[in-house]
Amino acid sequence: MLRFYTINALALVVFFGLLLGGFFGDVPAWLYVLFVFIWFLITAIGSFQIKLNYHLQSLNHNYKTSENHISITFDDGPNPEFTPKVLALLEDFNAKATFFLIGKNAEKYPEIVRQIIAEGHSVGNHSYSHSKNFGFFSSEKVIAELNKTNSVLKEITGKDLKLFRPPFGVTNPNIKRALKVTGHFSIGWSKRSFDTTNISEEKILKRITSNLKKGDIILLHDSNAKSVAVLEQLLLTLPPHKLQSVPVDRLLEIEAYA
Figure 1 (cartoon, rainbow, N blue to C red):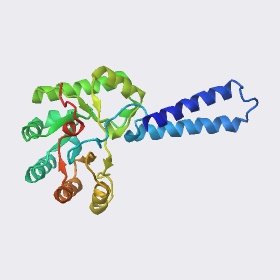
Figure 2 (figure 1 turned 120 degrees about the vertical axis):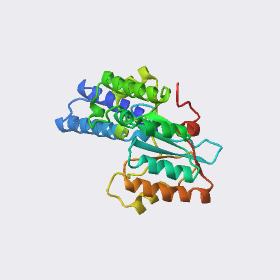
Figure 3 (figure 1 turned 180 degrees about the vertical axis):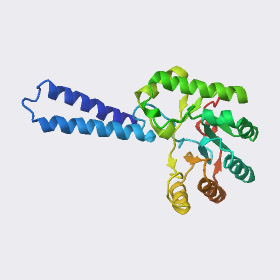
Figure 4 (figure 1 turned 45 degrees about the vertical axis):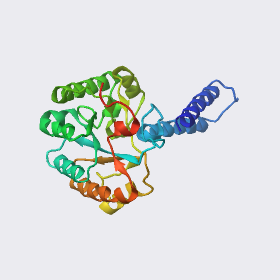
């Protein structure tokens, strides 16, 4: 998929350059506009679809695993109301997960962060601010966000985080350049739940359990009651399918900490 979109983007750039250079002779203005629109559309889709690996390589699954493992991941915590409920469910079902933490939230609730680690889960970086404008940050600002969150988490846990999930799953060249500096792995997903939308619990559960197979990475959030309810039903479906949730670093066979 990465090669497909890269080749298409390069082909578009080359073709547009040839148009500007007059290689194809006189070309109507609307055709220039059309190609600009196509380029913008491809770039926009690639930026908001982390699974496409358009701008950078993200780890979205591990279908080559020999184990019957999946990974349940949670974004946007820690949350004092819902993260403890998520942890209790995971404990009841002997399941392990990965929590991508917002730095400013971790600062407020360090005891929950310590509980996550103590109960055998892994944690990752989800930026410091989780700003809605994160996709427009310069590479320097992205680096500052990741470093600040790493510093916060290291002070709490003693661990230097290597896992990073971009806020909203947005990627772009600035984030790619930032990750080359910080050395974080970009972690995506293969099953997006949309559990923060108005979709019903039943539809969310169907989205993530339909064709669920070993190697899948599921995206949930430990920030609302709906997600907790969906998690319980999800955990009930795993044993009949002989699937077990493990931290994402174990599924992907990478190191979570430096």
